Amino acid sequence: MEKVLIANRGEIAIRILEACREEGLKAVAVFSEPERNALHVRLAHEAVCIGPGPAKKSYLNIAAVLAACELTGCDALHPGYGFLSENPDLAEICADMGITFVGPPAEVLRLCGDKAATRERVSQAGVPILPGTGPIEDETELKRRAAELGYPLLLKAVAGGGGRGIRLVSSPEELLPAFRQARREAKAATGDPRVYLEAYVPSPRHVEVQVLADSQGHIVHWGTRDCTVQRRHQKVVEEAPAPELSEEMRWALGEAAIRAAEAVGLVGAGTVEFLVTEERFFFIEINPRIQVEHPVSEVRVGRNLVREQLRIAKGEPLGYSQEQIEFWGWAMECRINAEDPQHDFFPSTGKVHIEHLPGGIGVRLDTHIYQGMEVLPYYDSLLAKLITFGEDREEARLRMYSALKRFRISGVKTNVELLLEVISHPDFARVYHTTDLLERILPPK
Image (cartoon, rainbow, N blue to C red):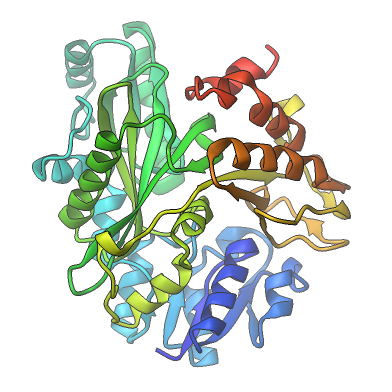
């Protein structure tokens, strides 16, 4: 493994580029036509255009991505997150072509992409799951199983992910319309119309565990992260460790995450997600890739997770045990998006003018923005990930508030003011918040 194609864009492409340089690997960037001047392209020694602006014609185009590999002589491919990162077909073709896919093998991606099958597999490994069903296609069976579970409940797409394909059903009258619409949406988004039912937990906390597995069978976890502050199942604020958990709960979550990763055969980086109530936790899913919020784990462990991915892909062992991992302090991350919270978070486009960006002790900014950059309508609205850290939660929280106040750009609307409201909200400060916090902060429509 000597030359890596970075099959992504934005801040994660820059992270991979830097990690490759630190590992002594050559790296090649790809870009869509309107992103010819993107920061990851400017920083790369070699870059290839893979198509026009729309993602389906560029960053989601497997043929174009693999052609870029062949053209530049890359013997490895790092997919980052989003786009093709969980696509088993890409991983399989890479294996057939002798290209190292920086991530799990195709069979693991296929299993983890089937949420219902993954639930069954990790349940067999002794990991607690919520009551639910396998895939349901018959409406008569749907009504029977829903009555057995009780309302409210969740309809989930089997091939869902990233918060997509989830519907809350509060009564029998809502069930069939939601089921039919969910199947249509799932079919349109993933090509797989299957959905399943899962019991609904009101006002839970969303806690996840970062895991790493090498090809020799060694698995460790990098502790917990809390992703409770969400909008429509999309994470907004993350922190590590998850607050207000007993040491017994932290230990149990870590052990459950390792069992889950082992059960699916994970190789590389992955995140095991749970719903947590006051006394219990339940498995949700495994994301077999690097996550947007991985920096808060990096800060506490003092290791570069992207470099760890590259080392594992090269066949190297982890080289350390769970007992050798030392955790330090507290970290928080805010996702700064180009969107308008006052108008249903409608994506904002335009030319970025940077007035001021934060820095200083305990502040990290992962971003791809630059002066005059055009925010395009084709991609995710993420502009930056602002990370702060300190000896304890309150120090990290106060640093986040100050850092957000110093994040000043114009030309596009952002969610910075809303993030300031979250960070300063009494419920967040006292860890009284649950997944409905944003609904309480935002004014009624």
